[in-house]
Image 1 (tube, chains in turn cyan, blue):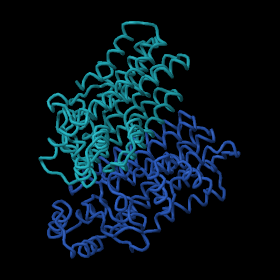
Image 2 (cartoon, chains in turn orange, brown):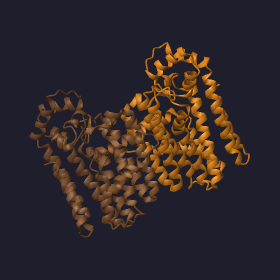
Image 3 (cartoon, chains in turn cyan, orange):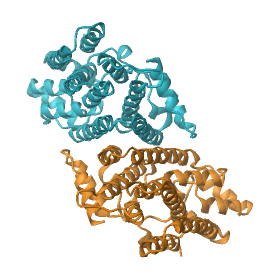
Image 4 (cartoon, one colour):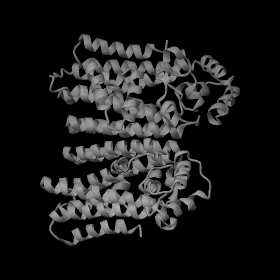
Amino acid sequence: MQACNRAIIARMESPVPLIPQLGAHLVAAGGKRLRPLLTLASSRLCGYQSTPETQRHVGLAACVEFIHTATLLHDDVVDESNLRRGLASANAVFGNKASVLVGDFLFARSFQLMTADGSLKVMAILSDASATIAEGEVLQMVTQNDLSTPVDRYLEVIHGKTAALFAAACRVGAVVADRPEAEELALDRFGTNLGMAFQLVDDALDYAADQQVLGKTVGDDMREGKITLPVLAAYEAGSPEDRVFWERVIEKGEQTEADLPHALALIEKTGAIATTIARAQAYAAEAVDALSIFPDSELRRLMTETVQYTVDRAR
Amino acid sequence: MQACNRAIIARMESPVPLIPQLGAHLVAAGGKRLRPLLTLASSRLCGYQSTPETQRHVGLAACVEFIHTATLLHDDVVDESNLRRGLASANAVFGNKASVLVGDFLFARSFQLMTADGSLKVMAILSDASATIAEGEVLQMVTQNDLSTPVDRYLEVIHGKTAALFAAACRVGAVVADRPEAEELALDRFGTNLGMAFQLVDDALDYAADQQVLGKTVGDDMREGKITLPVLAAYEAGSPEDRVFWERVIEKGEQTEADLPHALALIEKTGAIATTIARAQAYAAEAVDALSIFPDSELRRLMTETVQYTVDRAR
């Protein structure tokens, strides 16, 4: 992981000083580095043997983090969120323009990293994932403020915006190790299901978590009129009066300060968090099951624990 | 070119309807399709033989247009321009969010098109160009409102934001034809110099052209405080009083309706357009010279005429 962090910093370099400056801001913010860790873990699980000259897993882990960071930067622009990873968002500090353009740079750099890796298979996996992410983000945008969004549509959104990159991050680990397709598909399934669980829990935490812990503002999703499972479940199970409330705050976007506590109370009352976490647990079980084709090992146990930890964050 | 337009429309497809909708808006707007034409012309100049099964030049021409369109969409966000290609900009019609996200989709799709082409060399050329474009856009942003920007820095900006993609569009034409490096480099040099000439003329037209012809508003660059050669030259050659004017409108961004006619008069008085066009002509001559390693042909003559036409737009 240290090698990966070094690669991230090294490949953030540019003769245009603002780029490494903004890069340093993001690297300092840290984040969980969950996606690059998945690439490193998956390649090792598949027995990838790296030498100082062949550190393909490190380059690809950095590549995956660049794609993710580019998405975050562009998400900052569109979502006008004020807090991200517990620090002021890049947007608030550097402005909309910088977020769009430095995001584009990181996205381009991720493709340079793939090209340097030199595997067409890896390139297909990661460029397909990039297109799926963009589709997911567009789909999220068009479902915004729309309480008639079916749950399946919401699942499609989080598959695109989150699970597709988790899946690709894991799958390329099997590719660099040159393993049979069954292992590639198993890691793809692991990543997809872990990503779905991760995003469901994230969406639950937005209506539940202590801001100190989460590093983002509770209620951000509500303020943006974002359609997530906690809201869909609370709306579905709500009284006629509850529904009027949700229609006002989510569909019309008319919100006052008293609305967030009331929303949290409705979500509590209708068991919407439990509904969301139950879904997350089902995906988590699928993720763990996907690893069963690999022999038992300390690493496999660690990956299984990561899945459980992802869901347990919500408790 | 028809095949290329078909490829553009086909590859704009997505299960998320907003993407082809916004795509159709851009395709309808048309534009000059100059960059994909360069790929098609360059590949033919290098003797690329396509069959219905191997239409690599068409796929790559579409790829180049996607990169360009993604940049335009993101440029709309950051520059708040109201007119682009004579139609309302995508941003004005669909909003900031859609421009960022659909731009990301087109960018990702361009990498899928490169991956489908399957040449690592092509991928390196186009992913390097994408990173250079983003660097140029960031550099343009940080020089905005700054009249102390040296001319060389301005040239670096337009190299990044425009000439790099022109160069890559031409160069990949030689690569698909599997020609010696000398031809690749000649087409790279042709594209770079044509791109520089093209952008210089574009920047001149922003202070000179009839809006009907150009399809963009005269004075857009001034309103945005953009640093271009016409402004740098007029500032450099201006009286102390002129300089106070430029510092107010460009550096402080304080503008009234009377300022645009006054700016156009100062640019006329100081010969700043002539200075800009002279530079463009020098690049154009380099572009024509770069083609001299290819034997004379009707296509070479057409490419030479395109260079001349690019500069003559400003008359």
